[in-house]
Length: 331
Image (cartoon, rainbow, N blue to C red; front, side):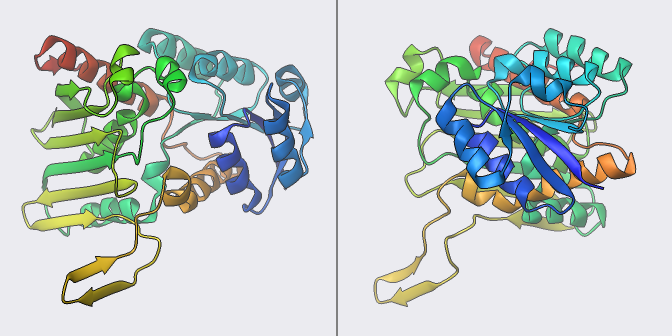
């Protein structure tokens, strides 16, 4: 059985997913939509897919699933359209910038018994996933404290910032999901602090570029997340989980593992440049999981509810940073 996919959105993340999909046996990228001809044609050239409109892709009964990689403000509408068309759906985060709109969308998805996976690719990173597996195996006992560091090598364009929903909903949302994944518990309170330290233009656009959030779970566990839009040394992605019996950590990925030592000290290779390189294998593992769920009829994870939870935490962090107080989150 070959699962035929339609791709909505051929930008940077769309190309990343198309590249991952091509390497998965039993799948075929059948059609691609993007209003930018050059972007769509690049995917056509690499995959053999045909160009098509969104309506054509959704009406094509030979297409089993869609990858939604369009701008955020299109996600909820396209999820609903795909659900009505009977497609399995993979959608990049977030579903929408409004939690109310997300709840409305997820109700339609549930009513039509649609498979929906949300693109929290970091759950599928080999190293992060192994940390969770070893937590589950009881190696460090009861988890007490999680620390997550996520720093981009540089800020995105201001035009992107203006429509992204802000650092908490665009960048830290991945870390909120990772905190839930590692704590294996729901978050009940969020306290956040944020500033504009990297680029004044980001502040003028109504966003922040540096932030810290402290989360507390229902059982009392604590997670601390730090984000920055600038890391002069590369793409900084680290986690540490402290428990009653020990600590588990996953460090950064370098371009190679060679180190040099001399009288001046030790020097190692640079970090991987950005998310396309750092999480290349995670994207493929993520889509492989989606394909297996379609084939088996099994449960999807992370699903729409996970997407909603992460957005609610992002909203709480935004409110906390703005108001200077801890915000309670309903479970």
